[in-house]
Length: 348
Ligand code: MRU
Image 1: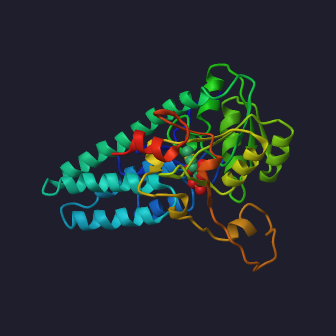
Image 2: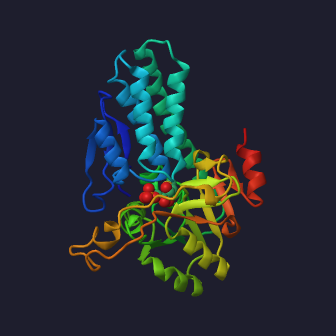
Image 3: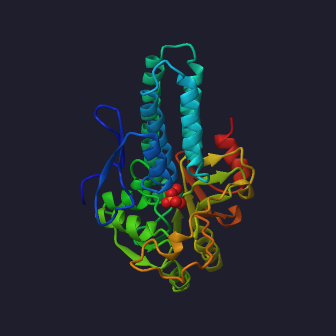
């Protein structure tokens, strides 16, 4: 197993947020020290840092690093503008807005205090967001592993590993924990068109951890399930509505529908920071639509579609709660009815 990768950290002088650039993986391991607001927005929008919990953690550090540059002059105006802009970078993962608003509310609660005291408190809060995610991912990995049996093979979609969170990840957590304990769980890895998070990132993380994994194209999952090769689908989540509908990477819903058809359980693994009880159903979750060039040409040497062909590129879909066998959070495994059980565990 390779050494642990740190995907997000403050620079030693705390003037930058350092990230592992996920657009360069798996070919190159490149770290970037991001200092300016424009580079912060670009890093989120272009998926240099990606995955719902990771963009929340990153944005928390960004608010802190930017707040150190404000001084006394127009501190709150600048903070509010930066928070609004950070939230606008990506709409679907609720973690982004949740963690930025957590930072903003803390600062607002200290109105009247010296700017350096507010900034110091923001630094502590950003670290707390990161530490809490590490603890939640560990608990999710442990609870998720309890649903699997030695010798099982699971299907993964997109990347819900340490790169997308802090440590362990959510959807990949049980696999990584199993590997660390010498328990064999194998994986089929959906490549995850169009941005190939499965092929580029999940395969890389699982191979580094010594997990036996096999890469497939997204449209091969049905055959794999029909042939009995898969015992469970494990996926992360970008936003879970109050009724248990789960927005995740485009294609997750298709995998869940196929799994339902073949009687394969579907497990959605997520920290409570991804649950949005203010969102009644999946129909209320905003779905990000991205540039069609990602489909036409992004990962090809030459464009693979006729120049100018129209594209529709929704980045996420919503898996209906009826298709979800269980939801795994840091508070354990939750079964239907999700509306009641999510409210009971995570309501005010
Ligand atoms: O567009 P991405 O790569 O940010 O999408 C990420 C996903 O869909 C993940 O599955 C989700 O954020 C959960 S990560 C623990």
